[in-house]
Length: 86
Image (tube, rainbow, N blue to C red; front, side, top):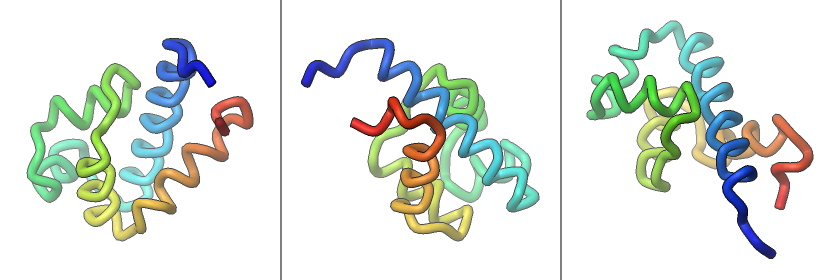
């Protein structure tokens, strides 16, 4: 199956939406999430806006700070749009 740019952009936007919602639910600012995950605030902003996609390591770090399993975070991204499910 070809993994085209359109799907990649949709995945990035879906991840960003989920990350932002989970961050808000945890009562964290972008700065607080970045600090606790040992990242730069700009990275969190890019992820939330769908401009960058996180590495697997980053997904695990963000999930840990948000008190989630990485699979829960990724699972919610999958549920955002049925077309994303590959």
